[in-house]
Length: 494
Ligand SMILES: [Zn+2]
Image (cartoon, rainbow, N blue to C red; front, side):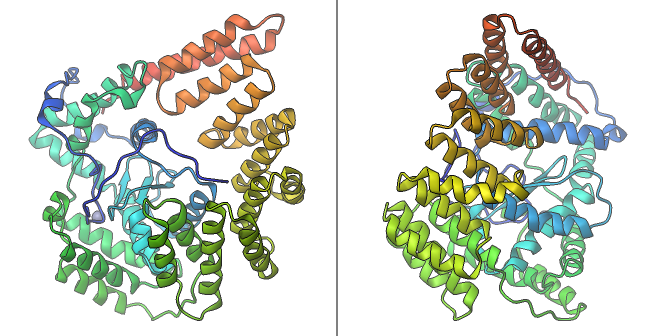
């Protein structure tokens, strides 16, 4: 898979250095604040924020984030971050919600957790990590904020002193959803107020708890518990070099005390020697080359500096990075040599299969990509790396109906996969199937919370259907569902 661009991109150059900031990525002007008119939601009862509501709120925010943030829609990175995150979740206590991990392309060193088990990390934070345990220590901390319900508690605590703010906070979700209009959620300036309202600070004791339980969790999950203090130390050092103190850091500093405390905590666990993890290094190389807004010279230099020891895993990550660079520069023969060499050691590594498939498509040899991927579809058809690459190879080879079959089957189990919907829209267009194309477009819009456009597409589809009762009934049912979903979001309150 080559890079799939998100519809909106935000750049943040300052280092927003903290583990916990919640929606800290945008600056809000008071003019935008003034434009918002909030619905009356009444007083919020402190016991009324149930897990079920948390999950619903989480879903609404995820929609909003899809349209507002450059979420990394990359199957390999998505899979990797979820592998690490879910390993930790499997060892955590008090897990009440499903968990989902995602990356945001942003240089600022940041990670955040929000309702319903959604944990996001910036690519900048990933690049600061030197090994998987450091990454795991951040994820463990964020997971703990969720399992300990720190956000819900913080909201409930704040509600006691400022009920209007909290009503507004939840009300603005409804407002955003209700007024999405043509441009979708992203079109609403007023919703920027959300980021301010949501800049909820966890208390010091919440932070301590997240550090303490998070470290225990990383140790239990067989990562190195000493990594947390190392990573905090690196974050603090980054901050020392930055000229501007981010607001979030003022209230939640990575202090010497915090670093020392995490170091002492880690000492209560037996030391572990963990060899470098190849997947971590490959994911890092991939971010460096594909999700890093900088010059080729800087990328080449970073690859050299990051994978500079004699470990074979480091050598492999370096070669993989070089292969991605060669591919980017359309030097397909160079890229092919490097990947074929890497596959001699790890023939089934998905990072290498993905790039090999890209190279075949670059060389205008989609049949070779199809042959490569077909082998893997026999036992991992539902793997996103395989399914998405296979579909894109089929599309290149003009095998539209086959691509449609593969995508539809994949979407049955991965209904939130944005690149798959985009490809299905394209496949239906090329296959001359306007009704199916409208239906796929509707689903794509719905994932961004743009119900108005989604419904328009479904009506268009509905108007074109002739003598196909099954599709007609299906479209009618979906229209009803989306209307209901839109209504539910409008009424979402705590
Ligand atoms: Zn925190």
